[in-house]
Image: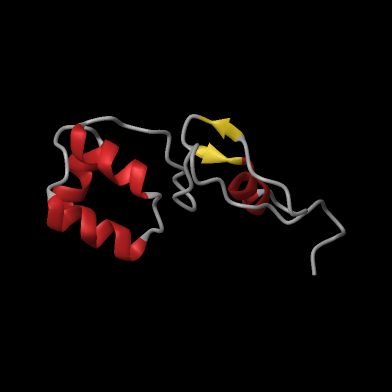
Amino acid sequence: EADVLTAIECGDRFPIDIELWALRCSVPFDIAVLVGLQRGIIEQICRGCGCTEFDACVDDDGCGCAWVEQDLCSACADKARPMPEGLEP
């Protein structure tokens, strides 16, 4: 099963209906993204939260996220930043 997911993530093969349903159960994709995946249209998908261009998540300030890397949104990048020295909880 991990090999199938890796092949889909790498673009080596496209997911079939049941695999799309399983992905939808675990990651809240927009339906347009799911249909695109099945048709071989690869959208930008965040590696952290699964948001897309059509399904932006909201950062801590209440703003929609933006792309900071090809596969990383600003909300996830902010969460991954280490706290400055002396400000750790």
